[in-house]
Every structure is written in C-alpha cells, then in structure tokens.
Image (cartoon, rainbow, N blue to C red; front, side, top):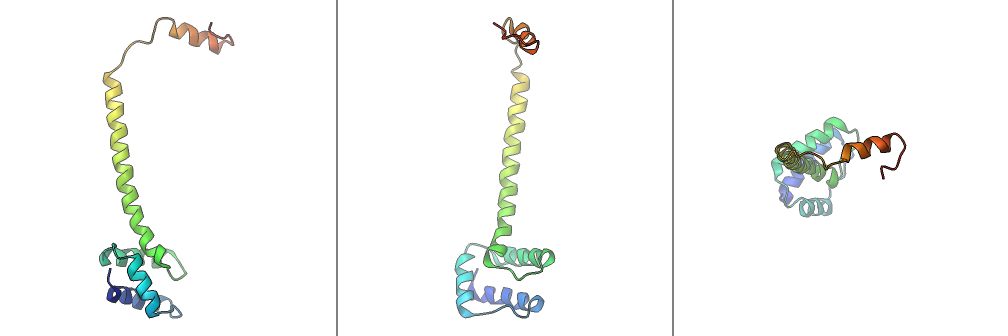
Length: 114
C-alpha cells in the first residue's frame, strides 16, 4: 500500500474518530507496515474494524484481518488433508492382531492384560 492510500484510510478513520491523529510519520510507518497489503483489503479490514470496535485502529488492527483470510486457507487445506487421511484409513481396514480384544477386555476389568 502506498502512503497516499494510507492517507485515504486516515481520512475515513477521522470521520468516525475525529481525534485520530494524522501525522506524516504515522502515514510513513503505516505504509511501510502495510506495503504488501492491497488497498482494497485494507479498506475492507478498516470497515470491519469500525463495525466491531469503538476505538480507533492501530496498524496491526488493519493488517491483522488479512491473517484471518490466510488462516482460513490454512485450515481449509488442513481439513482437506485430514479427510484424505480418513478416506485412506477407511480403505486400509485390517483386523487387529490376534489376542487384541481379549487384552483390552482384561484391561477394562482391571487386569494388566499380561
């Protein structure tokens, strides 16, 4: 994100929080912290923050919401991998070793199974 885009974010924040301090130092810092964040995502994140928070955002509040999208993608991939494992395990069904169930029953009755 460019510094001019950060200034646009600041202008929106000032509408909701008139005491929000807009300084060139802050704009430079925010632009550096959010250099990899597309402006469209920053606007969306700012709107989400303003809808759910009564305090002005910090840079982390705007950038943090993008992590939600990344985390969602990670969880989606992890879930797909787990379902793949379940499918594989369902096809690899084999009988337990001889004596397995007797050993379990003995342990449940308080024995050591030996």
